Length: 602
Ligand code: TEU
Image (tube, rainbow, N blue to C red):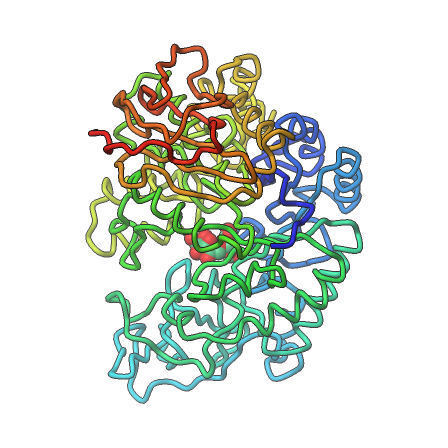
């Protein structure tokens, strides 16, 4: 694997709308990000991904772009953006923007022109179809015949019965027309761009190069697997009573996305030596080298294996909760899949997911543990994901251990995906209480509540009225309190980033081989990282109970301890770890397994 400049870095995702509001309008903004660059530098952050700040109606919080060449005034100006690039450069930080090109906004001028003339040049920029009514008065989804075809609410037979990621049909009537429809695999205000049209691709490449020429370090690439559809459009067996099928069913059959991704790389990223990280769901078996290998379409891609584990197309009420052993299996499996191929990007959360500590630490443990052990558990999870092979990403607020927000009613929920999930569950007769609980577990709002900078009103995020409810936990969980607490989650994250960059250990932590350890012991998450002459062991007693765990070799040095200050019982052969206690240790003898041992009982 060819070494790259970004391999030894630490990356961070900012969701600008909720990061820091500098002008008191209740919305985070670019000047607010600039004010916090020194904070991020102190945390040890080198690469910063901004969720979209382009001009947008914010129907999907900015993932619906109406002008790729301008900043939305709610976030600031292009001058602010240029200043951010300059200020980041001064601090040797690298700004990465969100590249959202599977779709644009229905308020983009291309779509407006398509509406005016669906058969003209811009009509070809999208997937538009002129449709006919069913021979009998069809009503939506009641007509799914043997070919599974469905009709629009007013009886037009639709080209396919795919379900939008945000619920409902993927076909919407073209504004101003009776029998023209357009495709949107996300929200109806996000019409899909037709990547089969070389003019569309040229427009996209021109825009990418314009931003890279401005000094952007690269892009996070949004929903990119969706750009290649199965054509001609076709139906699949419905997976719900609505007569529709999950988009993933179509993606299983779609082939050839690589020709677009390779062209985009060759025309934009490669000439600029840009860093790119793909948001890739539904990649096919054996595709990893093409995606993130030395000559891959992207520099890296996110490991979503833990994220999607247990999800059900039937609805959020059917999603299975992930256990620590499931989590370990996903994490370790991805390490083995990517070994020798490329650098995976590791997360515990992002703007589309619930808070990692509320998901990957069993809620029943979180609710029953003393505060000290709860803090230890948050640090344990941080350690485990941080030192596997790949690029670690911290999502804003993760570094202070922010948790899911409690919902009192569906009226408090902003996220369009959550509102759709609620409707699906209620439509299936799920009680409001159970449906709200499922929304609470999975809603994207959990990660989108304002950053909790302090315990002051507005959580130090805004002097105004926040656009989204602040998590009431901000008085207990906030940066200001943690800055001055050496045992805080925040100060532990600083130790994580420092250890990853420590010249004595970085070679092993960045390039060392990954080797599972005690993989058959439930609620232990442990692995070795090996490089020439050095072995580091990450060992987590990922449960509430105290246990004695065997060591593969004598310990040379404890590099990190999430319960530092507590007495540690350790011998050449084993170590006693209290609940969620987690150690990072340099091993003697290169960590070769010099003892055989029986696996300890729980
Ligand atoms: O998400 C793409 C995506 O497919 C999944 O994240 C998921 O299906 C989606 O979040 C609905 O639950 C990307 C962005 O991360 C997300 O915020 C956008 O809503 C989406 O694309 C559309 O641009």
